[in-house]
Length: 291
Image 1 (tube, helix red, strand yellow):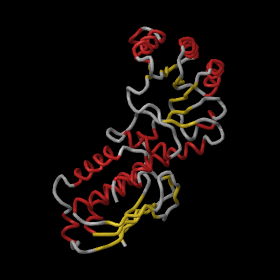
Image 2: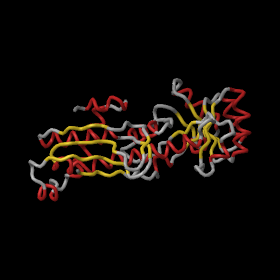
Image 3: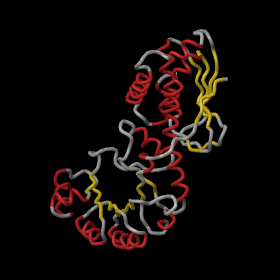
Image 4: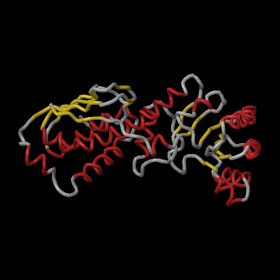
């Protein structure tokens, strides 16, 4: 098995492999797996499964598999790895997602790194899936933010896609987002927008608005997308009434939770931004069971 395992993910294989290798190195920075090497003979063969302990939505199963495979390559052994569930699949408690057979030393050395990836990313996917279910039938999509764990952005945003969400900008250079500090620094919303459009004419430009007056100004200057920051549902409806005739999309953001999202279902907003998808999600409980 090679890095072609990642083909279904759309992730860059070289970059992802380097990330996994760094994670494995982190676990072995103080020496080899002392416990495993002391208790397990090099010739002992076994089978391990990654099993879900609770219902959820998966992301990172191929990444966990690659962590196992890279460890096997380093150990000079072969593993037979079978992916049983695909990223984006939902699982119930007790369902196996991956099976690997080979040297038990290798399996146990890679166990925590493999679980760290699939548990963290499946937590993101599971949270995103809950939002997509809550917004089903509304035409509203849930989007992530740049509030990601440092070093994990590409993988976390991949997990959002696995859960049915949509990615916002990946970084600072693939689109522009004019926020309150940019407006304060340039003197006005119009001045900030004109400066961005002049210097980066090809980039999509989103404008953050706190008031309906700012929304009207953003429409007038030609914004393509308006972020409605910390607006109550009734104010969001008013904002959409301003933007929709101009064909401008809107995104509601700020303090919206699964408990409060029902109030936004009929506002007409296009997106709801949820930073919690990546900055404070709970990992999915997955176990590594050795047969």
